[in-house]
Amino acid sequence: MSSGPSTSPSGPPAESAAPPVLARVLALFAIVVAGLCGGLIGYAVMELQCDDGCNTTAGIVGVLTAAGAAFGVAIVSVLTLRAMAEWEATQAREAGE
Image (cartoon, rainbow, N blue to C red; front, side):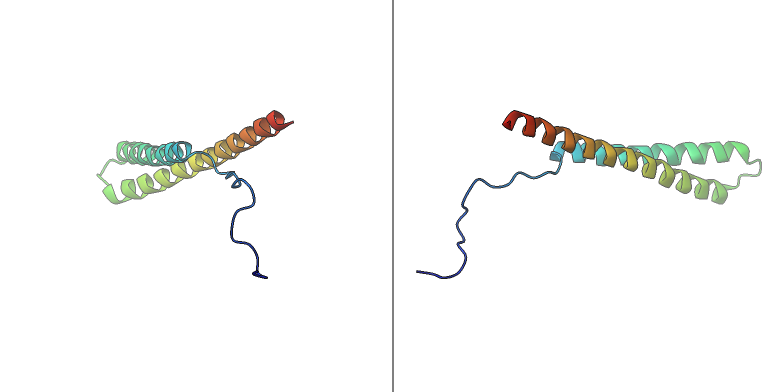
């Protein structure tokens, strides 16, 4: 005889729209790898261009290219994960009809 809202679930739990954990982990791994590769490439190119061993400038360029590469792959990863979630939602909606 409680007048408050019921705490027991009235139906099946709602499914999450988030992509699977494996997909998110792989996206994070791709972002980290892209950052490492971008940093190494930026550092190497700057080191080759500089004649008097300017390690500071090469390091700064390496960090900036690492951030740029990671940012670019992060954008692609987010778009891919969103498309994947939308695809799964569309497939589930069509299967329910």
